[in-house]
Image (cartoon, rainbow, N blue to C red):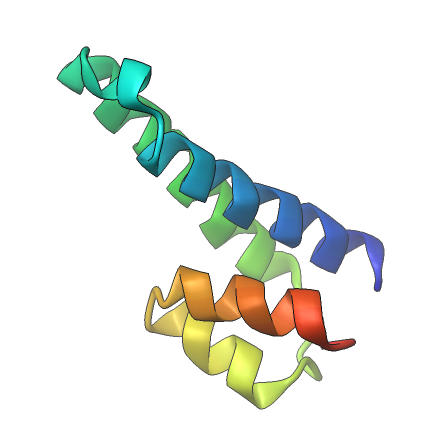
Length: 78
């Protein structure tokens, strides 16, 4: 897996961790800010990917199907 894909995988995992963080949800403003920050990071990483990535991965990222994108990255060499 290339460095950009490794970074993208980490950011997608971070997003899921934030979503499931009960402690974080107790402060809705901070929780929303954390989600916004990681989502912006995912967008930046997506833009930095080479044009010839797996079309299914590109589709999942464009549709914000981040769980599916993460699953694809973890089970293949996208």
